[in-house]
Figure (tube, rainbow, N blue to C red):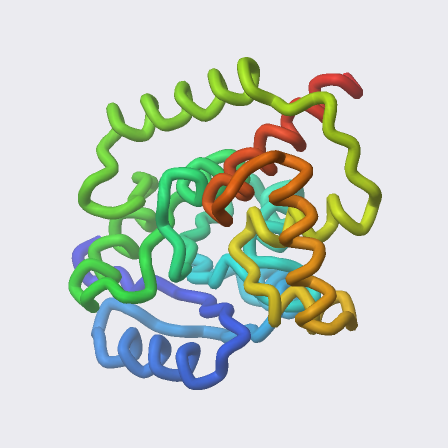
Length: 225
């Protein structure tokens, strides 16, 4: 087991970043990048063609987001292990990854040694969300978000299909530019939707929007069950 080579599938729609990660991993004797993908659909296809040990994926990608792709993979293969990369690693994103079935989330700005540690932890079946997130903190985070979901769900808010689609992409970490490209709309139109969603939820920041968005969909699912 000491010399086990971990087979990795890297998925990120930014070519330079993806290639940089691949070169970094290939320089390590215990990692082997067996495939790469630039969108969620390719990620799913590559996974079931090659069955890597670890998926290393960006949260926000075209076609399907990283989270959407991993959720679909987990429906068909519950043993899949996914570690997400993102510029966003605040509590609501950690919670979203946990609820999706992902095993970890690390910030794209971390040092390479911590990335290697995260991959190794996830490969061994553990979770890794950064050095500040231990099991107790993760449990408290889940309890906090689920309590807020029940107490402050904003059930009176009504969103149309387009607003819900954009809100889900925002929760997954997509930028206005990425959402615009995915939906074939202008960035200005997506910014308008963002502003309108902030107004409807009566909140001020994008972080709050992601948090209340998670609560909104959870409450909607509860109401439909």
